[in-house]
Image 1 (spheres, rainbow, N blue to C red):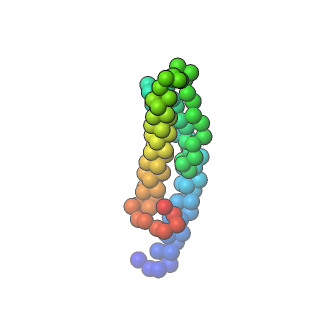
Image 2 (tube, rainbow, N blue to C red):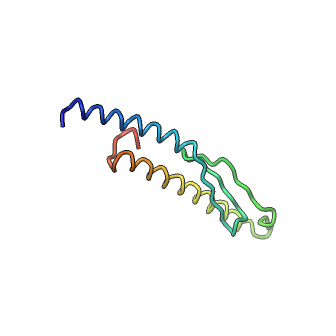
Image 3 (tube, helix red, strand yellow):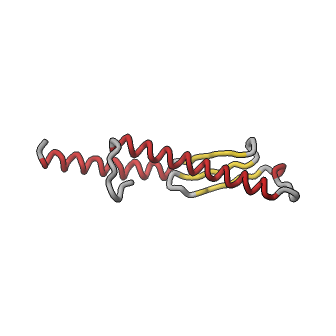
Length: 102
């Protein structure tokens, strides 16, 4: 493979990766805990955008349980976002790791 062709392929891969990063950042991921009592939403760029707590989940005698549900929902939303981002980028990059893109 000649150098010019390799450079064109690398540039295309870089453009595709940049576009994928923008698409991923715009995606929304939702997860819940406690049977849906706590819901967390996050974007593909790992930003938590919303947390919804069912009033029935608020028990002044058991604040720890509510805290655990919030943490679980947030972690699951972020895990889903990360998994989707990794999957999308691996599809573009073919498993290659290029510094600055991943």
